Length: 167
Image 1: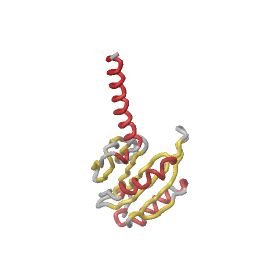
Image 2: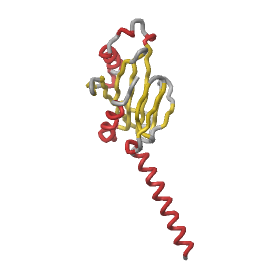
Image 3: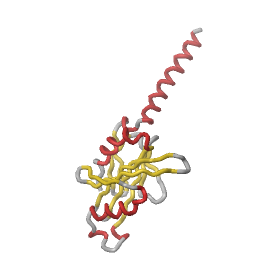
Image 4: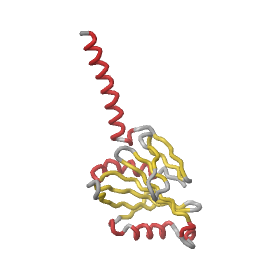
């Protein structure tokens, strides 16, 4: 009888520990802050995120239900690009994404673009919160995303994390 009780207690403790870890992964914004630095970008997210790679992007960070995709566009990509203002860059980004019907706004003076994109292979619609930055040698597009159904829950954290971006 003592072995059964001990086994049940051990299993309950393991289940409780696993549940805590799963809940933290489900809500990565509740994890401890962590600074990520790569390719000239510094961004504070949480420990729930891990650096990953995705073709065509400079750097990516993923957690269970959210991700950050970063694109660095060097001034050398277009002649005279270094003379573009952040507003001109924003216009280019909005034009390039016109098929997604983006909306634009600002966050503490930083251009923001929001849009949705459906991954037909997965049958999931993702909602994006993207900021645009101008550095010394490039423009940056930092896109925070999650499934559209979680967007209102995640948006305040996307805004918080976006405010930490430095190039």
